[in-house]
Image (cartoon, rainbow, N blue to C red; front, side, top):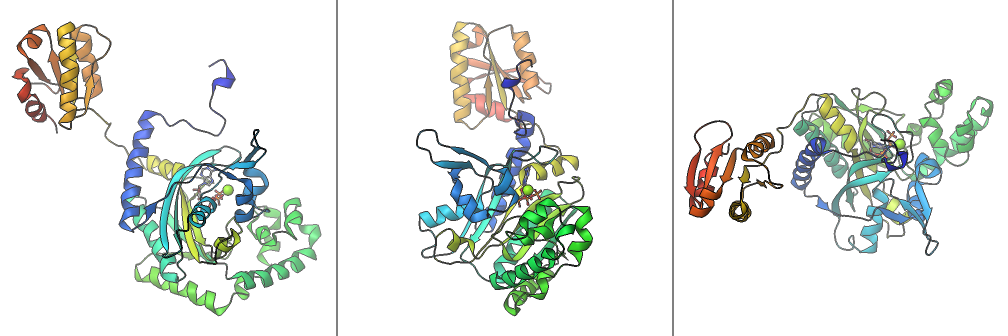
Length: 422
Ligand code: ATP
Ligand code: MG
């Protein structure tokens, strides 16, 4: 294409029909799976007040610092952001509509998220997530249930090389003590920190531990450990989560370096990782966020959730060689002549009334060229209506896989077509 402005925005993908079939299949599997655990669908706007994400995700996080698509509403000056994730919106919606008033909630949503990242395989500026949130549950049973859910989905999808990493971040008080120790530790070694780390030293020192800078790994390895600060309650909670996973033979690895990118997590955090996608190997991530509801202005309530990256999961499925049968129609209705044309459109509607998938030929042309299109459509039969058939109120049925063409009364058409559908 010559005109650059007529291309999609960099990092934002079109999903073409062949690939969209895989998406549709995936969405069906995921919906059945979510419903089998009693999760209910919720749908939030794509745009939220910028303040929501700043408050929920944290000012000193990659997302808020450099990845958000934020803009000013030119009509009223409101500061708005294309959602970079769904948890904050979901909690906002639940509070706004008082859903937590009487009962805990198991909720899910799906759709596009927007982050201004450097596009590469598995990392896009518009991407899709399924988000799964359980609000109002405090115990380790729900943490474990959500992890078991994931394991079940990988199994359903036939994904084998996916491993579970977990950690506990403890509670707010432990993180505060740890934070003070980190500031002290890194503060005395500022000459060894990179620019990102210096900036985070007093705002979010925990994030320094997340640094991928090889030059700082020794320093990070020797830093004060959060685990040494974590209180008994949180340790017991984590032990109980692990016990349930063991009961179900779900293998996991404890990764003390796993802190997650967002501020709102506490206690259990986890990531499902594969080595098959190169650097973008995390297909699903989540954890507990007991402080978020209060932070967004609600009465304090515990919560836990996770999000799956759809593009990464589908890439994994495609790499594993998965193919789907092409979506096809049952019948292709071919016709020639004015009377036949009128009858053909009625016949097509009637076949659809009877539950069949029907392509009605549009655009004229010889029967020969219409039969070529019928063949390419993958239909099981062509329903052929010429002047002869039209005058008699009948139609001919031609099986596309070979076999005799038969002429039947319209009343017998659906029955005849059905004989050839596999
Ligand atoms: P990463 O470390 O890969 O940047 P993240 O911690 O920012 O991931 P989360 O905010 O936890 O990701 O989002 C949950 C999931 O959404 C990720 O595990 C990943 O599968 C997917 N995801 C996140 N960012 C992108 C992106 N830019 N493009 C495609 N998928 C993404
Ligand atoms: Mg990220």
